[in-house]
Length: 158
Image (cartoon, rainbow, N blue to C red; front, side, top):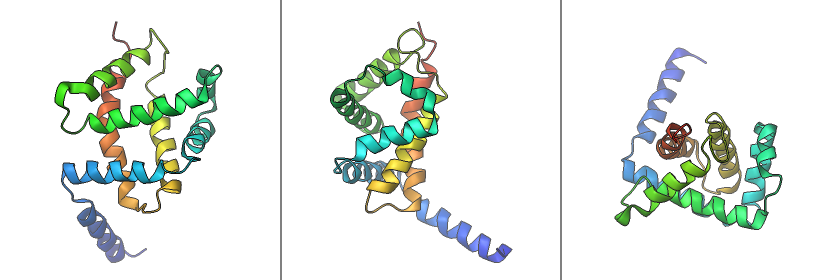
């Protein structure tokens, strides 16, 4: 690729990704809503997660999958709600609760596993969101990184 073409593409990508935080979170939320309409979304997400990091599957040995799918959907809602206006801090409280249940002293979900979670979610959204575009990947990563980094920071919390 010529340097001129590379620079032009780089500028186009940067220009199209310049959105307000509010616009990004709205677009990400809408992407999740579109993708989760598929009854296969959650199964595919876990399939992608176990493909990326097979060791994670051991955490789900005794899982009741119908309950887990509901928990994942609520967890996503809390991740996204953590970013916006949160009257009563409902989403913040639930992310705190999730971080405690996933901490070293409870489920012991090691912090590096969250990166696989994010990648599996991106793979799944890309497949199931009919309006997916490349910039959405960056918006998703940016939007979920903050609440997930909070969860990671609480891994050793006693």
